[in-house]
Image 1 (cartoon, rainbow, N blue to C red):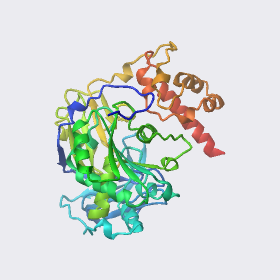
Image 2: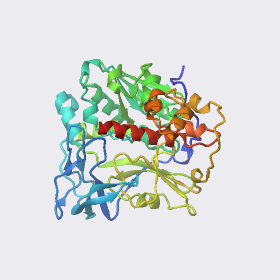
Image 3: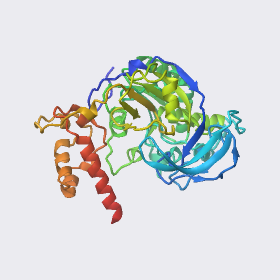
Image 4: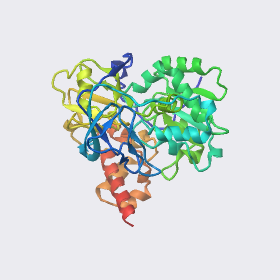
Length: 438
């Protein structure tokens, strides 16, 4: 059977063997819990609690600050200690609710339902109330995604099970250990549309997950498991939509404009929890791995807990690691401190003995064309980086620089080790900021 793919892409070392066979372990938090009010794209959430309030696990502590925003719930019971700026994994600061964990884990009462008994509006309301966002990193509010302006034009709901970023295996473990609930989450999403079919997209380096999900969906007429060729960034939204459906989108389009909605595996699982069990998004799976950690693994983590506890749960550092990354090595963020909270988009903590990137010395471009061949958006990264260095906004835009998805493929394959992605990314930020001023 042919494997779905796209033109371009690269093949970095996968590193998944370190944690892919490690079952999920629930990790109980210690100390204060920190809940940033911006864990999603859109307006920050607005606190509905004050300092000194006692809260229960699952209780709403901040409500969506607009249509494109998301509710935030406490993951533990305890007392609100402060509402103040706290540092995030990205290095920036965000106003956050700090809760002193009382260790009792007293929960609110959840109201379970059968999704067949719920109207479409009721399903969307339960998803919205649960504060679910895209958990692959983008953080787009899920209820907004599932409320497109033309619902009759949605043909596909794609579950992104590719997990193309090296090292990360949290989605893979979810597929293996919670396959029934993942399928149910997809069925719930499909019930919101009259004509949509479901696609579960999984890369061919995960044969066990492919086999299991095909068994679980063999009696589902409108759900298909599609095998994707293992290649980075196969899980990128544009690459995935093209590989799975043959349809294309660009920076001026939403997936819904191509009749598609894409959800991360953990997002789909969270839809099941919200609609069927009535539970808000308060936990997620985080992979802790790399050659700088003693016991790599996958952990079921309470949102708001400290990253340092993740490292301790994995046996602590192996030696003196030089590099910590939140997310994947291609698109994640290097961390200068582990004293930051786990949020809805935290997929992994990578720990490496050596910081190779900081020791790389760039040389002159040799015009080999590898960056263009690897670019999934079919751009000319070397040309764009040169225009960026000259601050030529007009030329950068003319050569479609705003179509870059910042995947890092060009920097990875460049034999001259030029920081192409970083230069292009900085230029894109400058242009977007200037556009907002007009």
